[in-house]
Amino acid sequence: MPADQTERQRWMSVLARAERAAIEACLAEAAPLPPHTRLRGPEVGLVMLRGRAGGGGAAFNLGEMTVTRCTVRAEGVVGHATIAGRDTAKAELAARLDAALQTPTHAEALHRAVIAPLAAREAERRAALAARAAATRVDFFTLATMRS
Amino acid sequence: MAYVAVKGGERAIDAAHAWLAEARRGDPAVDEIGVDQIASQLGRAVDRVMAEGSVYDRDLAALAIKQAQGDLIEAAFLLRAYRATLPRFAATLPLDTGRMRPLRRISAVFKDLPGGQMLGPTTDYTHRLLDFALAEGGTPPPAPLATPDAADIPRVHDILGHEGLIEPDPVAGGEPADLTRQPLAFPAARDARLQALARGDEGFLLSLGYATQRGYGHTHPFVGEIRMGEVAVEIEPPELGFAIEIGDLVVTECQMVNQFAGSKTTPAQFTRGYGLAFGQGERRAMAMALVDRSLRAGELGEDATGPAQDVEFVLSHCDNIEATGFVEHLKLPHYVDFQSELEVLRRIRGEATP
View 1 (cartoon, rainbow over the protein chains, first blue to last red):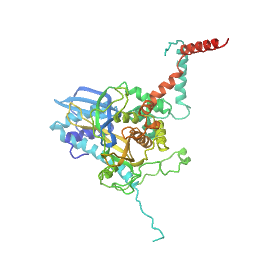
View 2 (cartoon, one colour):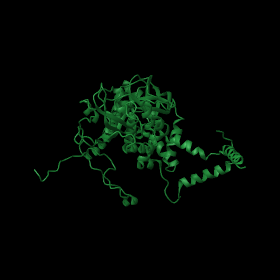
View 3 (cartoon, chains in turn green, red):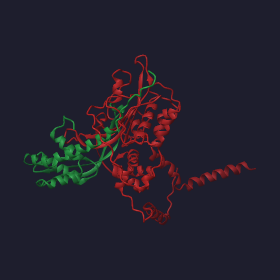
View 4 (cartoon, rainbow over the protein chains, first blue to last red):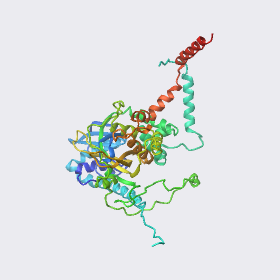
């Protein structure tokens, strides 16, 4: 994760990447989330993915991606989630968690029970991929010739 | 052109579709294929359908492949049709491929480059012999692991860029063209061209790229770098006022380095073509980079002699969904059109015979 992320950006990115089943499993170990009302969604739509010509130049439209967004209010705090994919239940759960994580009475317990383990799991997944990739690194060596 | 509503085919159509469903299911004694199996085991087909359907969603692409019985153009068509039913919430921030977590990264121009060369899960160097053991099935041995290098993996063109030997990235402009909102207009700028190529037919792009190598608009390409891996997707929802990561996607990027161009004011330097594809789409990314470069002929003052240098020709024909629509519409009833042609022909022949 980039170092310049705020706490909120960080937990939103952790929730966006986690599987719903993993979030639910973590929540089963935590106190119930506060009751909420839906302000918007959850609704499925698209975002247009952009690339850059040459990798770093002018932006162009690469193609779209399905996303789901949801905004809720819980205990007077507004929580939001936009996540890749079409899992409406996950988007709602992520929005509820976003609200609760902004609420001082819930934040610490949820960080411990939900965000930390999900972040660790994602870090593990990335490490496993990176380790496989590293094993395919080419170590070039030059053959010594008979002639000197 | 006129079409005439023809009635009376409903029963035949229903029967045909019922048979299609039965044929799609295949032999009932064989297990039905699951969408999850397609998504996880036919990944390259999924990548292609996502690219040509122009929607990144592995499960939807897998479903489309199942529905289309593996006809990938039909599957891309289904995906493109589905996308039309969804609202668009936002455009993402441009993907930062420099911050990719690479699974594969190779260069054909530098052997020892910072960050090294990683082959990733490639089919390169396989012998292309049919593996009959796969027919039996089974679990492969686990892939080896090694300790990753923590160092950054710079882009190859940044290495050459420091010496001014390669053209820099084109300067960022305003809002990019969007072919899903405005129809293609000519002359098309590079943003519109890249969008069209990104969702263009892989076979068409491959053939055009091949044609440039064979002399129809030669550009002396080298693979500067290919990298494939996960990139974060970021949006900036107005209600939040800051950027959030909403997930990752896998993309393949190809930086093609091509022969020099220079002018009285700019010293000679390598030029570049760019390819970016959803998923593990290496052939697509390479072909796109070749065609992107060849379409820059006008801008770089090259003679446009080959089809791959003709912007209007390439962009008007690279979309396989438009192409299949127009080709396959020939199957629809043209009874009246044909009748009129028949009458014209009879009249001509009647006038010719004394």
